[in-house]
Amino acid sequence: MKQIRNFCIIAHIDHGKSTLADRLLMLTGTISVRDFQDQVLDNMDLERERGITIKSHAIQMQHTYQGTEYTLNLIDTPGHVDFSYEVSRSIAACEGALLVVDATQGIQAQTISNLYMAIEQDLEIIPVLNKMDMDSAMPDEVKDQIVDLLGCKREEIIEASGKTGLGSEEILEAIINRIPHPVGDPDKPLQALIFDSVFNSFRGIYAYYRILHGSIRQGDKVKFVNTEKEYEADEIGVLRLKPEARKELGAGNVGYIISGIKTSREVKVGDTITHVDRPCKDIVAGFQDVKPMVFAGIYPVDADDYEDLRSSIEKLQLNDASLTFVPESSAALGFGFRCGFLGLLHMEIIQERLDREFDMNVITTVPNVSFTVHTTHNEVIEVHNPSGLPEATAIRQIDEPYISAQIISKADYVGGIMKLCLDKRGILKNQIYLTSNRVELTFEMPLAEIVFDFYDKLKSISKGYASFDYHTIGERKADLIKLDILLNSEPVDALSTLIHRDNAYDFGRRICEKLKELIPRQQFDVAIQAAIGAKIIARETVKAVRKDVTAKCYGGDITRKRKLLEKQKKGKKRMRQVGNVEVPQSAFLAVLKLD
Image (cartoon, rainbow, N blue to C red; front, top):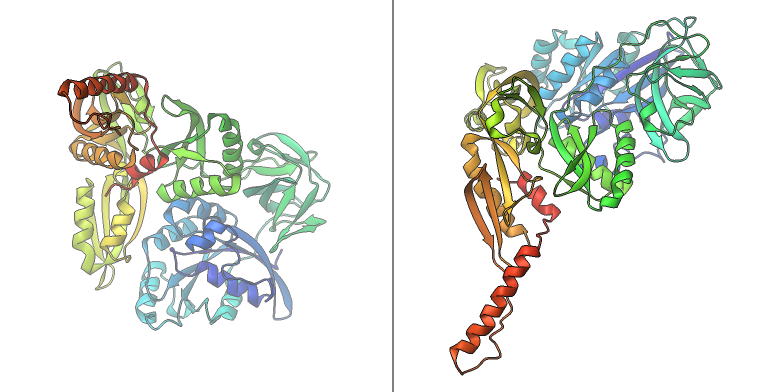
């Protein structure tokens, strides 16, 4: 156990985590030159296309230092705030962390938030200054920021470059010398923490775990404590570039187990694995249950695909434990699922993965947050979507979740950022100058306001320089109303939203204008209306497609033309009563992209 080191890499987006991981894998000979490709651990197509890490990836490396061979278990983590749950799980399986900071950009909001997570778990932090080969690097200035934040010595900061390989040897030395080896008792009963899992259509579910005490052998009878299910360990092993089988794994190791589990409900992230005949007395303190921030309905385009969609979401949940879902039905869209996400990017990625990995064609409704409604009968109801809202006369007050948002940016952009946050009903709480040109703003604002387009606007105002991080701070009373969208006097429940009274008129008008562009013309006039209760606040009309029935009447009496037009008018009226309007998927998505 003295030769094992478990560590993860934490940083903000685009600070070079995955590139640095590539360097370490090359240096330790874990991957050959032939197998090498950039960001080798980002093995999902989506990760490569977008250049972001979505999943945390575990991999084992062997490195010989001063004549002793060490086993290094690396977990590369995502940097985006929407995937912070992945980071918290990786941190729980490690004793140390590399804190990577971009020498050209300095410390960002997500760096700070991930760092606090690591410090809470008592991890040994090794600060690394990455991208030192860039012309725009500011090593002295950024080192000052790191010393202020960590309270470490300047000489402890390792200068590195993931691209050129500078400092990689020093990083490996620091990992071996500074990160403590795992502490565990190999003679105690088996106690292992599941930190991730993945579905394989041939072999069932692979559960990834970290052994805290005891050891596990191939063929052992094991039990998952939370689900109380018992299995036989068909295969155990370590995670190299591909899984490698082993006969036995001891305390402190990170590995995988295959036991022919077919149903995804039987594996829970944060569960404890132990032996059937010699169980451990207490379970590992797993991770706190994730609290979704944004809710949206996911419905199959074809109603017959409902069961396929359920099994697809279950398999996806195995690999992404922060996704939550419950069945629900909608008048317009039929049966589907109400899913909880950590943010809008998370929602977009899930939708993409359903399409690519499981070939599921789905419709996603307008995302919203959950509200607490106090009724006049002294009941407290949690409302996840507008259709669950009681009658307006039965509502005493509505509470909405608030967040504390930290924005770090250059001083030049403070004015624009403040205006954006105040427009979104934010309250400025604090303003600190970290250096002469970098300022940290703290706002309290409703979560519902940042769900839509806040992040995109923040990036464009600050020319990409602002970094944003938030955490929830409880609920407060809000003046919210339900805005319905009617097509031909029929409400489309998938488009209705709960919105602040001041923003309702403007938002309703913009949705109507947008839908007018997107809804294809029918044989009859389609009225698009935005309504608050019985009061219509905006209207647009999609004009009918008309055939020129009077084309064959040239000359003659006007009554001949009138007769034909009246006949057409009757037909259109009848058609309007029976005709229904198809709303394309692009219309649901367009609501998200309203400027």
